[in-house]
Image (cartoon, rainbow, N blue to C red):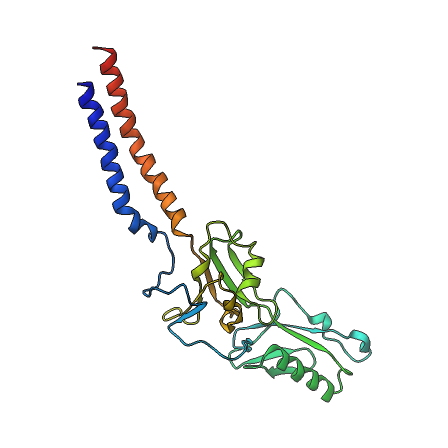
Length: 262
């Protein structure tokens, strides 16, 4: 009888192992976000899905709904007028549905489709032409530019793009770096219309990836770092182990009780 029970325990263990190995392949992809239909060669440093690789430098252009922070840097000509007191880092100046922004002393100005630098130069010229400031140096920032980073980074969340040409590497550094679980060969950048997004897969193991303009982040980009398969497999092992252990314990307990009561 003891032999029979031991065989029964062995059968439970064997069955559990079969279930584990049969399901491990599917489990490896179970908890992966933003899966793509294409299998990408690890040889490629940067691969673009649903779009083509951009050749031009990325500079965000001011658009409707943006909020601008406008600051006068050289405040030595205060006898004229200053816009520094009106500068607000929290709310900024809203770009309305016509692409206009209303600023102190000069009123409504159209800044739509301009880069930050182009907007700065336009405002400097307007303040001088209207004899409001002398040799102004004006800084324009778009304070609503944000990206989302998820997955195997030390600090997930939303991050502000507060400088021109912020790259994927900059963002990952701001997020506290990658965890030991991170899959380096297919880091995803999801960009544009979420109904049909452009997806950029980046192999950070390949230094050639750093040359790509696609690594320069755009407003509302989503960056996702998935875990490597070995860690997903480890999670599966723990899951199966926790499921099987109660059955093994029951069978072992019955075997011991039977042996002691013979």
